[in-house]
Length: 170
Length: 175
Image (cartoon, rainbow over all chains, first blue to last red; front, side, top):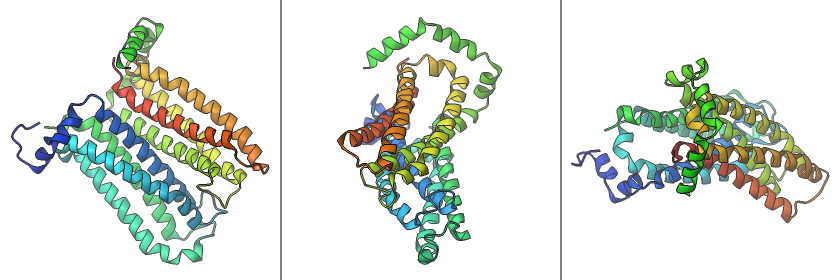
């Protein structure tokens, strides 16, 4: 840690909130635990929709129905993961911003978001034509496969951060 | 709580577990996993992805009981959709878990949180067996979920969350 705050990340890390979380014995692990439970919920519910879109499961049921069942839980858990993730980030903002895996995680999550937006605003327009089909159009399958791969990547880079903070830190 | 866990660790050190974990750490597989930088993170990622698949499925089944999801399906259809995925995810969880234990036997086995987590996993699997095969079958036959079943559904969700909590805290156990 840098005692003379030079960058905005140092300022955030050395803020009251940052040092409180970093110096507490239980706050960081507790936030991390809640973060894990939320992200597991995000992934688990996203996979349910992705597998339907790939045509592997739930093929008797409409894609819109599967999405309606899972999306409120996905978004609720995502908000929880984002809040706990932000608090974890504040406590080591400088270290995370200097860690390539943290930056890769954020980039991968942004790509997952773009994939979702493209699917939602473009592919979804024709949903009434394939909603109840067992086999989905290629664009739908590609969106589902990309979603699974990108979220795998988010988890991998997220876990890699914990193993490399010491290497790229300070 | 910290003191209690610490005493638990002290006691574990006096048991055969310590010797066994030291013996495992001499295995070729253990040395290989421990000396290849990405081996342990990749097993942890596999473990997290598998618990995501399992927990997502468990959540959807239990939400069906509360009529919060999957209301256009029967219980039988909900069960058929998710139970298979839970079992396959459990297989991946056990394999990746064994892999992580072989890679870092002392960290895992001489660890009070590990020994709290394991019985909870066994309880969760047994409860799931009982819950899915008995309750879900009764519901598939046309029954309506009562307060006992709803409480059970909620407890299963909480139990899996506690298991995830233990999993994360293995890394922070006072040893």
